[in-house]
Length: 99
Image 1: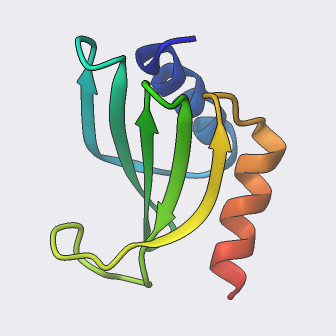
Image 2 (image 1 turned 90 degrees about the vertical axis):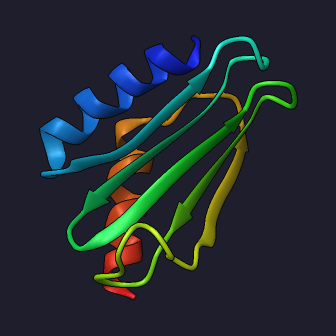
């Protein structure tokens, strides 16, 4: 799966569980397929940063109701590869919003 496929996959999963707004999509196909995706979900910013060279995906979150630019990010999850199941996504978002 490349980063563009990941975007389609995650948006179809999000569509079925939460309303979301795309804030940023940046794909660098000539830089090992790295990319950045950012969404606003239930008042929080969620950012997915993929490092294609290291094959790592980092899920970052903001504090409630922060503007996207100038956000102080907190690392929520760090994993290998581009696979996030719908359960991981839903549970992760619920966990973050319950804190």
